[in-house]
Image (cartoon, rainbow, N blue to C red; front, side, top):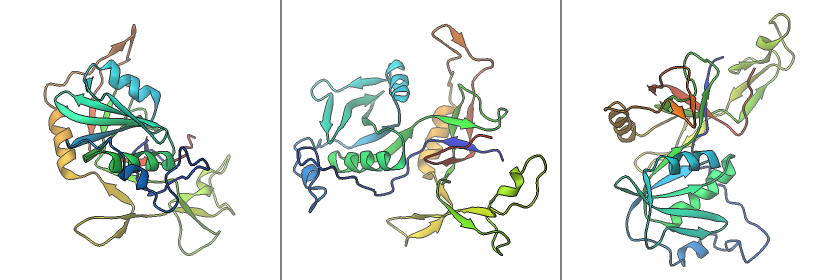
Length: 251
């Protein structure tokens, strides 16, 4: 099965509380420390969420980010929130680390600490099909699925999951007593609609259209870095569907 694996932002609403009062948020009011902070900036900014050191290095090496001269960063609840501009757009970027719970706590703090208008995730993407996506390409998906939570369907169950373990029998595919596994849906919350269960989480259309317009307008991607060059010219890939999870299995 070919699939795009992409570390992508999914706010699950999970908050971790540590044991030390000096670094934790109040157990009675988890947002009290943030609400009383004097770091709230009046300007609306775009929140940029990074997962790793490599993502941050790519951002800084691009030369597009300019730190704010007065308040270049804020250290809060174990993370550094970097303030500045990406080109002419005011932003705050934070490096959350991997795994959903780390991203969730980082994003929750970002939303409470700053006046954030939108959130953009910048991370790595990969593909099990080498003809679809190769290193150096830029991917803008139109939808994302969280494929890290499964519901196990027993052998010979009436409802079959998308992942059939028998398809991976060796040396010949066939039946497998492990049965199948079905991906669980997620709850999509919207300010204008009732919550609903979905498998594909759509990328907001205005952002997708903006990315499409900017990435297809006189954009030239770098083909060499630090003396090493890509095997082919990089390209922008639009409209694919991506998946994200806390773990990946590559056959």
